[in-house]
Amino acid sequence: MKVQNFINGEFKPAISGRLIENRNPSNGQMYGSLPDSDKSDVEEAFLAAEAAFPAWSNTPSEERFKILNAIAEGIDSLREELALAESIDQGKPLWLAKSEMIRASQNFRFFATAAMQFSSESHASENTSINYTLRSPIGVVGCISPWNLPLYLFTWKVAPALAAGNCVVAKPSEFTPVTASMLANICIAAKLPSGVLNIVQGLGSSAGEAIVSHPKIKAISFTGGTDTGKNIASIAAPMFKKISLELGGKNPTIIFADSDLEKAIKTTVKSSFMNQGEICLCGSRVFVERPVYERVKQSLLEAVNAMKVGDPLHENTQVGAIVSKQHFDKVLAHIALAKKEGATVLCGGESVEPEGFALGWYIKPTILEGLPPNCRTNKEEIFGPVISIAPFDTEDEVLAMANNTEYGLAATLWTENLSRAHKMAQQLETGIVWINCWLLRDLRTPFGGVKSSGLGREGGWEAMRFFTEAKNVCVAL
Ligand code: NDP
Image 1 (cartoon, rainbow, N blue to C red):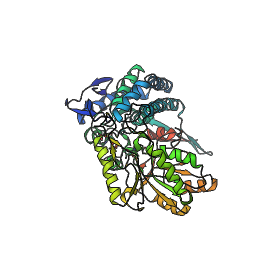
Image 2 (cartoon, helix red, strand yellow):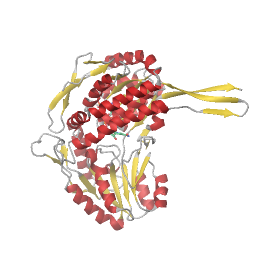
Image 3 (cartoon, rainbow, N blue to C red):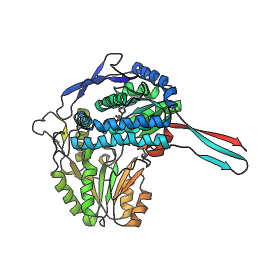
Image 4 (cartoon, protein in one colour):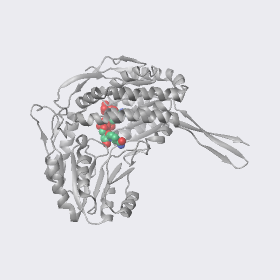
């Protein structure tokens, strides 16, 4: 499949004509290509977006609602094709890709209604003045998304940016370019005016950085790794751009003895290994209260050993392929490091070659035990099917262990003790705390991390506020 850029409503190659090969993670084979775009393609996309901005920003919100809603419907009607493309491109199980396509259309549907309902505040000061806030679209904004949940995260950024009246230059990951390109066709069918959404494909180091450093692209919404986020911040900060950074995580899962253990164990299998552990919200450090430690460990092992690793398109597959050779090598290097740091590998710990897919990039779901809290394995994000497990004795001890990382994205807490749950939710240094659940999302809630997991929040009004500029108008009475 030959993916192209989508600029000013047209599909086109990179101006340089250069291509990047695209490989299928399930079998390691090259099966397509994408444009290796650079600064000149980004400039062309920017000019298209800039030209489209006056009309789009003045389009009545009801009209924007209709178009964004039509895009949501377009995604729904192409759900099977999109899911298949995503599974082949990314390596995730097809059943999971299908559920992610539901979320991709929800993103558009949700922000379509936000376009209609977004309002700003007014403040009356007794007898002296009335202030009101004007919220205007920013102009041309940049959206850069990663490879783990490709269309799901691409739409999570693009939909609110468009709903708020901006025009967009967006870049999906070089590893997963296909579904964003399919979305372009859906946007044409939904009558999104040309130039409102422009998709520039290519490498982060060239196309991505060109978006970030473009002097007239005034806001950047980025989801990806913490190091990339630091680099983006260092470029954008001196230019006083608005930035929203959704970065990495090293999320704790905490299981108390009083929890509904059956549910906690079942969900922990998912929260650890869904999408091959390539979800920023996956729990990668599992802490279990000592009286139930052995029981939880054995149940996890039983469940994880039974997980089927293999062909992403097979309906029984639970763990698909790792997205790229580069990432596959990185995850295996982390497992090797863990062993050096003293880990006992309770299960997995190696790559696997499913029958018929010998050249694909598969890693068995891995559980590590016996690691010291301060080792690199317990501190660095692996972003693969690898977790460590450890016992704890007291609330204070587990809280200290959970917070002992530079990351602060999400935490999952299992307990039936109401006051402990609320108390710990306050003390956990993360942007999100799930109590007795995982990945239960309400799109109105603020989404994002603290510490090195990011800057700013997306979701609901937070996203609409990020993608608008506020102006205070003060009228004397
Ligand atoms: P990267 O940071 O490598 O890449 C993310 C995106 O940024 C890609 O489109 C990438 O392009 C692009 N990019 C890379 N370098 C630059 C640059 N210098 N300037 C501008 N853009 C650049 O992350 P991954 O794709 O590897 O995604 C995995 C990471 O994303 C994990 O750390 C994960 O935790 C995080 N993540 C965070 C989430 C959150 O909500 N907090 C959600 C999902 C993932 P290219 O593909 O060419 O490298």
